[in-house]
Length: 131
Length: 259
Image (cartoon, rainbow over all chains, first blue to last red; front, top):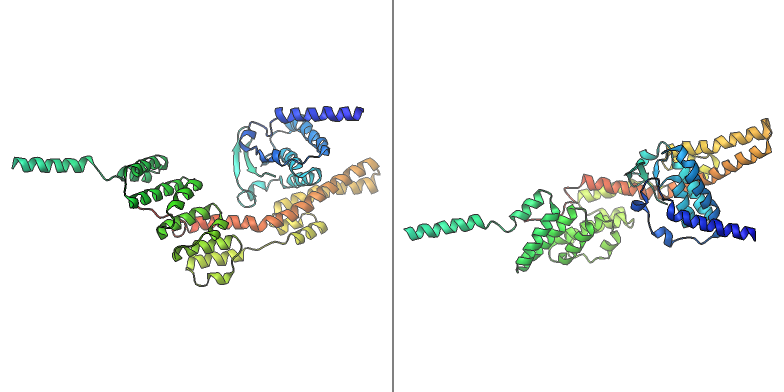
């Protein structure tokens, strides 16, 4: 019973986060947030656990690191969107692949393997790569 | 005499006051103020009753949208006049081609034979052409096709196999050396840690953590190398398409217009 209550509470918490926490650092979700992701959601309650973990990371750990990601959306947001779009297994693997691609060479592959580089307020120049 | 003088004076006045209808639109066009040029052209379109003039204005509106990179509206304008002349049809195909709407070009009926080159180019970039199709075409088109067929395809399963043996090598195969080196270290580092906690400093918890990390990154590496090889050809074709747009901008990718 307590597990069920915890699950419901965490779901409510997550749904609140979805509204309140922006998808990007800064104010970029207005520009790049694609509504199609919401329409293609994988309905899987297991998603809640990694998504909540990602939100906790974004809220408490990521600000300490500063602006280190080379991409837009950032790697954590990419994994978040991937898990919502492809489910927990494939989304997680795609997120890990993105972490491995997020290195010094990312910007040299722009206009070849990635579409473009965009300037994002408060974040600087980032390589655009959506899941 | 006085009467003649007044008559000639009015003729000159008429010439001075009423210049060519398209002069201002042409000025705006040359000034690259396409947005206001379209407004001026639409005004001319409203004033004229001549069908030929209307066709010409429709084309000019389309070309203005074309130079504004608003290909949807350009396509809309050109589609109204595409069957009237080969130049207008060329503009229509060109707009579709630059939108990468190759399927639509292939589905269209070709009215004028001189525009077959756009049809062939679409077939080429839609990956449905063979080198033999370009034997009787212009030298530029042949050159484009030859270079296209030189773009290599990468086998995703070979990339997967390479990465399974040596992490990172699959990404090297897909010409992503930087990613390959980085992903190799993301796997090698926890793996070294795991060996250390297994054989040197025996610690079961740390061993499990490091092995799990290595496994997670290994899974990511396998997927990443497979995917990078899979999208390699598509991405290279995209780069090549941009290259030919720049190299042949005057010959193939310049729309027809006249004021």
